[in-house]
Structures are given as C-alpha cells and as structure tokens.
Image (cartoon, rainbow, N blue to C red; front, side):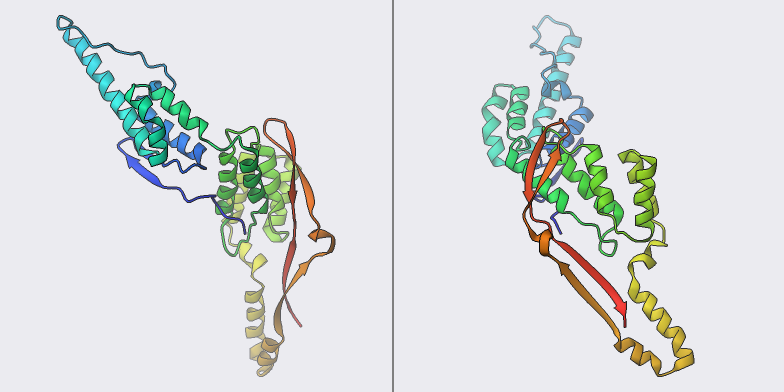
Length: 287
C-alpha cells in the first residue's frame, strides 16, 4: 500500500485560522492555508502586491489619516505574522532580508519558487504513488480512499504534470473491488458519464450502505452457515470448520515485467513513466 503523504504535515493555529507549515513538499497545502488566513485578516493585498502603501502622515494631517496609517501598519504586521507561522527556520532565513525591507510580496514569491511540483522527478514520484494506491473496504472507507487520491492531485495542482479530474476518476473506478455494490457503482458511473464530483458523491453514498459488508466478508457467511447446520447435524460443525481455509495467490509471469505508463497531464502534455506492476489475488473458500 502506498503512503498517504510524502511527509507528515504540521498545522499551526493563528488568530485567523489554521495554516500548514511548509515542509518542502507540501506547497499547495501551505499556499491554500496561508491564502485563507490572509483573507480572514484582510491582508491578501500584501501577498499579490496590490496593497496601497500608506505613508506616515504629517503632524498637521487629520485624525482619519492617522487612523488609516495605523490600520495599514497593523494589517502589515498580521501578514508577516501569518507568513512567519507557516515556514521553518531554513525558509525564514531565506526571506528575512526581504521582510526587513518591507517586501512581503517578494518574500512570498521566493517561497513559491521553493515548491518542488515543477521538478519532473518529484512529479513522477507523486504520480507513481497515486497509481499504486489500493482500496480495501476492510481497512479503510471509500471516503478515506478518495481523500488520499485527492491529496495527490492537490500536490501537483500547481504543476504542468498535474492530475486532471478525468484521470483521477479513471484511477478511482479502476481501484474499486470487482464485487457487489462497488462493481455496480463502476458500471453506473461509466454508463452515465458522471463528473468526478458526482462520482465521488455517489461512491460515498453507496459506501454508507450496510449491504457492502457481505460482499467482502466471506468468513461471516461461513460461520452463519455452520451455526444453522449445527442444529441439524451436530458434530458436522467441527468438520466444516477444519475444511475452511484461506489461500493467497501471487500472479506473476508477464505482469512482473517492467512496463511503461503513458500519463496525460492536466496541461495536455504526455510523459512516459516506468512501473513494475504486480497483481495479488486473495480468495477464501470452503472445501
């Protein structure tokens, strides 16, 4: 099973909401959280350099001009505080001179340049993990699995190697178990050509149905059958229990060869990545 995130993220709470600390690989999450906090503090203009600079009023200026100046200074401090809360020591050292010069927009642009999403190797690694993710209803909910896939999409959202909605939907449906409601959900979404958003809503709704349990839990079905037979056969229950086995088969052969995967990015570019697929089939049976 692939990992959920390249690195664990740290969340810091500010007076204007939570922000994700930039760890070098989570730039999109960091950016989104900082933008939200800046919007709450009414300081977005300092990031995109659209904030009007307010000069220090003269002693003869009106009280209103002094209040405007004080508001400007206070909001600028808020912007620096939010940015400072969302970076580590290395990034702080990289922008401290710009901050001292009052250039918040320049500091932000320098942090943007530190994002790794445009690096082909980083993008390739994220996409490999994305394709290796698996969905097992016994260990995670469909909502959790969808959130993992979406997190990979967000990681490359600022990159020309981004994962488009059509690609994410295709991988999501291909990873569904070929049993019960999941098989029906796959056929339904493909036949009706639902959007990614509507596909996600449908899968979450179907995942909440209790009918999904019998499709993946063969052990309960065997035990239930044994209990019913016990009333009529008595000692046959022990013999049935001894004949219950679980086996796993690893199918190799051609599937173990190195293959190339052609990925189409959100930008329309196509890049080939190499992968080594392996198919694992687990089956429970009686007899």
